[in-house]
Image (tube, rainbow, N blue to C red; front, side):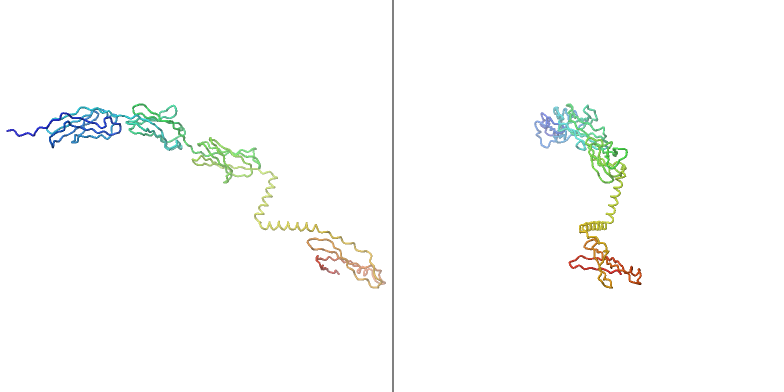
Length: 424
C-alpha cells in the first residue's frame, strides 16, 4: 500500500513582475514586486522568490519576500528584469521579462566658482576652479578651459553634481578668463566666463633723488622717485626723511610715483611701497644739501641764539628785559630839559673897603640830568685879587687865590635838600 500524498496545490496560472516606479530617474530608488495570480489556497505553503536581470553580473540570492528594493538606479541599469517563484515540491514558476528604462536628466545651469572666492588669489597660493550643475543625473563629464580660445586644462568624470580642478601654485601667467563644461550624454553645457586675478605683493622699491643741479642747494627743488619693479596695482608710496613722513603718492595702474620737496635738510631719505599685501621699504639714500656762505652765517647766528635761549632760558629773558628797561629810561631822560651850562668864573669881584677879604661866596650851576630824578650841580667859589702887602711874598698871595669846584648831588623834591662837601 502506497503512502498518502499531501493534497495538491492549486497551481498558479500567472506570475507577474511589477516595478515601482516603472520609469525610474537616475539616482532614485526602485522596488520590484513578484506577484502570483491567483494566490495559493493552501495555508502554510512556503514560496521562494528570486529576481533576475540581464544587466546584473551576478545572481541575487532567493528570499521568502516577494519584494526587492534597489536603492539607486542608473542609466546603465536599464534592461530586462524578471522573477521566479518556487513552491515546495512543485515546479518553478517564472514571470515574463519586464523592460525597465532608467531616465537620465540632462545637465543644466552649469556654473564656475573659485576658491578663494572673488577670483583673486595671491601669487604662490592654491587656486581651485569648482564646476557645478544645478540638474543632471548619471555620470557627468566635467571639463575646464582657459582663455577665450578654450585651452583645455583637464577632465573629470564623476557621478556627482560638482567637480573641482586645482592649480597648486598660482603664477602671474595664470591671470586669465576661465570656464567649464558638463556633459552626461546629451551634449556639453557651458558655464560663463570667470576672470582670475593673481595678486602679486610689491617688491622692495628703489628710491631715486633728482635735483635741479649737480649739487642740491638750500631752496632747490628735489624730486623723490620711488618705484617697485613688481606688485599688483594700485600701489601707495610713502616718502620719509629719517623717520618722519613727508607725504605720499599713489600709482593706480602700477609703476612708480614721485614726490617734490624744497631742499632744506640733509640726511637719509627712504620710501615705502604698499598694495595691501604687505609693505616694503627701500634702501636709505643720503642727501647732502649745500648751504651758501651768507646763509650759513645767518644759520650759525640763529643757531647760537637758539642755543643760548635754550640753555640760559630765564637768564636771557631777564637780560633782554633789563636792556629794554635801560633804553626806556634813556629815552625818558632825553625828554627832560637840559640844564644851562655852568657860567664862566667871574673875573671881577667887588670887595667892601675893609682890611680883611670878603668871605667866599659859593655859586651854584645846574649841569645836567643824567638819569631819573638825579640832578648834578657845579659849585665854585672865588676870592678877589688884592695887592700884596709889604713883605708878603707872591706865593702867599697865590695860595690865597683859590678856586674850588664842588659837585653835589641834589634830589628834586618839593623841599629841596642840598648835600655838598667843601673842598679845602
